[in-house]
Length: 272
Image (cartoon, rainbow, N blue to C red; front, side, top):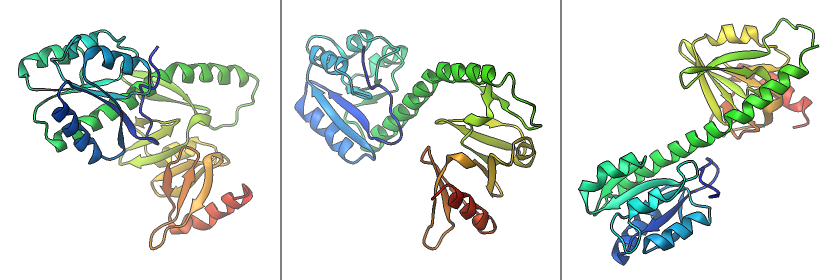
């Protein structure tokens, strides 16, 4: 099983370079050196070595040529289980293989000599795809948590406040327990609900949602933001700008001046 084919936001994107031409490898390395939050974790000059490199794990994205000794780039991509594969970006001198590459769900297909900016854009698309894959893999875990919470709350008296919210999720509807919400931000007539690394856009005014949530659990820190009190780690003060609450997830949510005293009181009661 291939390990480490997702890309959390808190670490660099791990890239493997695969090309049988040393000048091409050097140019790819130069492009990576100029990219943000990306690092090269291995190189290979033929398909067999590349396959071994990928199967060792720790690779998020593979930049690979089409024509190489042994396995071609296309054969290499076909040899890996799609559910465990890293993201593939083909970098080649041959345009005629593009259709085959995209049939293998390639993130992008770049022609040599690759432009650095174009490659950086492809890497960002790969990062987005990997985040989406990681979020999808957490759905089953979230559903288990929901089932456990519902079972645990069977004998809980009604509080008058919502204990779950239905949110849209890739064309379906997902039951999201309120105690899994980290924070909420307003987006015009919508709210974006942030929960455990995912976000859900719901058509509802933030004032209406706030009325449905227990004020003992949620704090309005800004006209357009609610945070769950027990997710607050600390209050960060910014020179020349508004303060912000830092949450367990690492998110920083600005605090309005008129809410600062209340937030300081909450942080103080938590020992921060």
